[in-house]
Image (cartoon, rainbow, N blue to C red; front, side, top):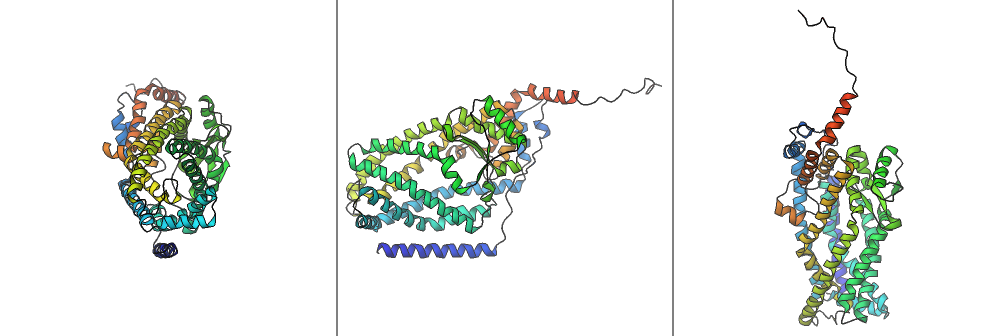
Length: 465
């Protein structure tokens, strides 16, 4: 099979599946959004009292979630476990096809006919690889990211705008991925003995660079970011930021509702690129207490330097990955390199093999990555509670996030698959915090009661016989 034939076959398959999906969706009624109740009342068990119990308060909050919503979010999240497995297995199949059918070697040969200048040669190969794999993965992508999201009421885009975002993502990947490929292959060619050390260093620097530019240069490609001017929302957030030493002068809103119903916020970037951003779903559906709880959590990430710590943690993982790559590439190429027509580690045709080995490494270490992130999320939860003192707003936020996250998983399930604490654990942490700070809420209740006018006392004769 020639490369041209392979392209044509893959493209026909993609068009066939896409047309089938579109025809099916055109006949179906769009599902309603899987929205949890937007107004969460503080249940009686969660009211401050001398008999307050964190477990009872947690159960009372969870009892407010309609059973059908719980079943739907559980089905969505648990289905994601299978998506992880099928995506991995399909990626393995695609990589082996590119290697065994020598498509990768043919793409390299075509790149060399275009230019002998190695950086441009690498970029031309990357463009071929990206386009071909995007076509091969298109049926799965359109199901997983479009139809499945609509099935569970989590997406708002029609197919045209969604496809437009996919094209934007393809362009971003072409530029950033091509830049990283040129850098890494340049390192391998110049430093054939120590490439794995310098390759890890280049990857870490590139990771930092991407995090740095993302809020200002990448996010606006997909969404409109505007300055938020509502003082009822902005003033408490900026006050909280100043109190926690965060140098923010503005709060920004992002129009996430054009793509999704998910609620989120973040404090992202470095130095002058740092931004406090809320999405419009949170602004539309969240109570003031919930918004403050969410922003306290996000500020916790910033104040505790979680971005830097996560980069350090990921840097260790990246170094280990390159050590594993050095050994596994040598071993694999000795056995099958000639069959695949790969000349060595510095040959661009090796890319599918590199990404296959990295996929295996990532699949096996998924619980490690999730645990690193989940630990930081829990720390930010605690920081936010101590900062904004809104445990009930935090419980409401956890319930809203339960629209697409399983609320009550088992401990092993949570360790493997969750990159955030589960909804139950987050609500329990908030109620436990409230139990240890009841005096804050009893004082507020007493203040509210003392500000209420006292009715006049009845005449002394009333009630006497």
